[in-house]
Image 1: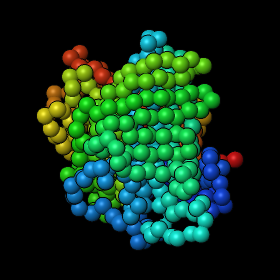
Image 2 (image 1 turned 90 degrees about the vertical axis):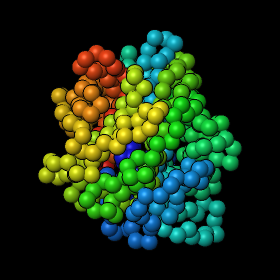
Image 3 (image 1 turned 180 degrees about the horizontal axis):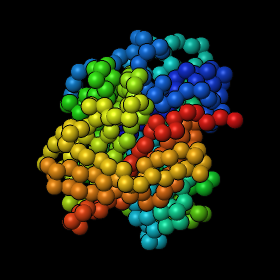
Length: 390
């Protein structure tokens, strides 16, 4: 996913009814003027999900088909995050995500090439750690007339795909992708190449999000991608290199009615282990027992149950923008792996300020025994999940 990214992530962020109304009115660009829905409503089953396929049982992933879109399901995302070192001595974190949200379970024939049954939505963010600066933006458009879309890539191999929303794009390049996104304040131009195989998360790719078996997604990750290219920050273009992480999910219902959001961790350790964790938070402040994760190495994947991991919040941060209080550092213990980790944001303010507010940012990792360190990304949803508006 976002959960991812799970989970989501998230598109969770694309609310079908709200964006459908704006889309039918003929708009594109920023969705910040929409309002009235939440992440939980967007990802919960119920009204508006009739006729869509659901993730109900494990299934093998087949490539390149599963790299592309799955329009029979209501929600889908292609999710990159990464940590990069610059030739200027700086460190940069980035997020680029394309979301697909179906307006109807069946493609409808329309007389105009502008007609579409899919809405695409994208988030881009860049963290300039040395400057303590964070820039984020969003784009959305209809999946028609070439404005936005996704497809498995005929060229390249493995899990290669193209996904784009207007000028922001993820284009297949060999087995990897060329990522481009820009705003007046920041941009990325990166090539990512897999260094690990595709990992099927959960039960052979079926990721349960609640006790209701209908609340699940199909979820796979590529936890390490060698990354090179440039970023632009504060008016300067910097050559960078580092590691990225790809999450892919599609579903029709991921959250139950008593769940308010999730905390998601993607951690890349210096000893070669990669860790994905997600905690599904319920309204009564408990965690859903289906919260889970995995430890990934070159030798295979070890699933993690909720009882296998202890995550303690060690500090909080209150956003000056939304006044929302978020967890801001964590102690993550996985006894079976001999890990006792401290996870800390590389910048406190990494709250995205789009149609939905949520915190997603680059983090650093240190172990209590000093044997491992690393970088990663953390996503926090449901702390401030109401749409912003005028």
